[in-house]
Image (cartoon, rainbow, N blue to C red; front, side, top):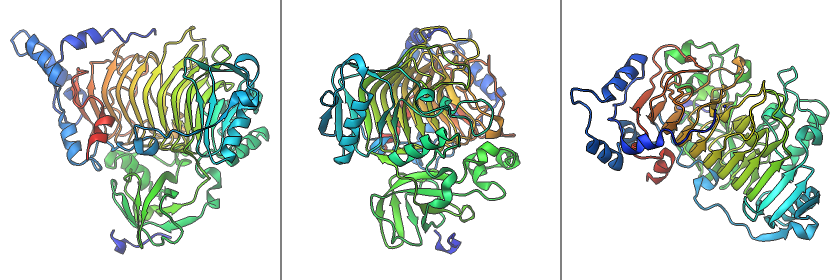
Length: 586
C-alpha cells in the first residue's frame, strides 16, 4: 500500500559536593567535534589551569559563570532545529504540546460523598473508583480527595477521558496501599520465559489506562497468557490503515497522503513504519553510516519485536491530499518502510492525577526481576495525560510510561525504601516530559540481589525529556531496545545505579541522545558522558567524570559522530536547560 516516489514528496546522596566548587569557578570551554578518547583527554588538558599562565584568572572565571558559555552546538541547533544531526527537537514534548498550563477540570465528585474515610480505618478504593467511574460517565471532571490518609486495598483506576483525581496536595492527602499487583491481579510472567515478573516494568496501583485495554490485560494475566501492551501490540492486524503516506523528511509536519476521507482534524492516529529485510529503518534510528550498516540486527529478537515503529500523533489540519501533524516527524518516512497512518487501541486522553502521595506498605525490596508489584503511578496507552505534585513511597517501581505518549510528569518524587525502576519509559513511549522530579536516597539499605536503575528508557522510545531533576541515587538507564532522540537536561545525579537490558534487545542508544548541563556528584562517567557510546549524539556541560563500576563499550564500530562541549564544567552552559530553550525558539 506504499505510495510512489513520484509524489515527491545505588551510595548516600552527595549533591552538595560539587556545588560549592562550581559556584566559585568555571573552567574554560572546549569546542565541539567528533568524540574520541584522545580528543577528550586533550580537551581536559587544555582546560586545566597551568603554571604558565594559560588559565583564566579568578575574576575571568567568575565573569564566565555569570554570563555563561554558549556552545557551538546550540548555535547550530538554533539554525536547524528540526534536522540537527546530534540534537533532537523536543520542544513540544509533554501534554498539550508541552503547555505550561495543564487543563483544569471542574469538580464533579468528592470521594467522601462515596463513603471514603480519611482516617485509614477502611478500604477507600471502592469509593474512589466509583467516583472516578461516575465522573467518566458524565463526560469527565475532577474527583477530589480531601486531606487525610485513605487506606486502599485495591487498584485505583482512571479509565475514562478527561477525568482527574485530585488530592489536597502531596503533603496533605495520602493513599496508603496495602496490597501489590500480584495479590490483586496475579503473577505477571515474562514473555521471554523463566521466573521473571513483568510487574518489574508494568502496572501501577494508580493505573491510567483505557477500560478495554485494562480488562484485556488483566484477563490475559489471570489466564497466564501474555497480554499485548502497546498501541497495537500482538494484535496489529486488527488495526485499519487510514491512508498510505508519501516520503517525507525528519522535521516535516505536513505529509502528503493518498486518502483523507477517514481522517478528521483533531484525530489521534499512528504513524507506522515497518522495517525491511536489510533493517534500514533500524539503521536510520541509529543515525546511519558504516557502524549501523555493519551491526548485526537479525539476532536481536527482542529489539525487532518492537517494529513496526508506532508513533502516535494528533492531526491538526486536513486538506485534500495532505495532513498536518501536531509535532514534527522524529524520523524520515521512506517508501521501503511501507509508511501509513493507522487506527490503534483507544487511547486514554486528558486524564490526570494531582496533589497526593501514594504510600505502599513498607516491605523489603524484592530481588531483581521478582517484583511483586508495589508500583506507583503508571500511564498505559495514554496521550495528553499527566501527574502533578505526586509522591510515591516504598514502591517497587515509581512512575511508569508504557506505550504512553505526550504525557507530563511534573513535580513528582520517588521516596522511601528504594525502587527497582524509579521511572520507566518503555514499549514505544514518545514525546513525554518529566520535569521538576526527584529520586530521594533510600531510607533503608538495599537488600542483596536487588537492582537500582533510575530514569529508564527503552523499546524504541523517542523524543522523551527529563528536565530539572535531582537524583540522590540511580543512573540514566538506557535499557537497550535502542531508544533514540531523548534528552536529559539540568539534572544533578549521584550516579550509583546500573543500567539493564537483555542482549537480544540490541543497542543501548540510537541516534540523537543529548545530555545537557549534568552535574555528577560522585564523578562516575557511566551513562553520563556518552560521546564514546551513543551515535550522532551530544554531551554538553558536564563536570569531569571517570569510569568505574559498570563500564560499557559502544555497540557500533567506527566513528560515532558524537559531539562533546564544555566538558569539565557545569552551570555555565547557556542555555542552561535545553528543553526550555527549544520551547522558546520561534
